[in-house]
Length: 153
Picture (cartoon, rainbow, N blue to C red):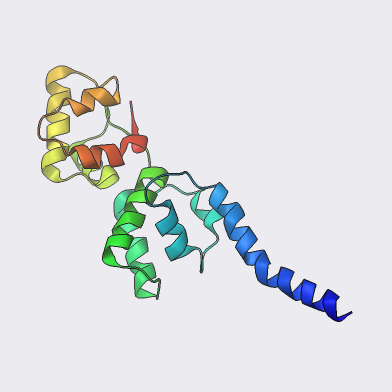
């Protein structure tokens, strides 16, 4: 009887760890996944995140809010989590139809970078692929790569 109770207690204690591991499997691999799990899994069901899509600015406000409520992590770790969420759960934007303001709001490009995209598109026609965007001189390669999954043609 006592050994059965110990086994049951052990299973109850380990169950949340198993659920977190199972939820981790639903998340895309990549830079920031471990940091995201570390900072967020103690309070949130990770399954919720895989179902929602928001622009980077929104994810920034969510992470800032969670840190203010006690989520533990450095500023650098929060930036990694924001990048991970934005890259994998950002809101897709059609780069050939978006205005500079929509690009700025939806992909978190600076006003200058957003204008570069629109100007290049106006002068050269619609973008056919991600590689076309990489041809724009002065565009942040890091931000462009971060938003790659959120850019539609």
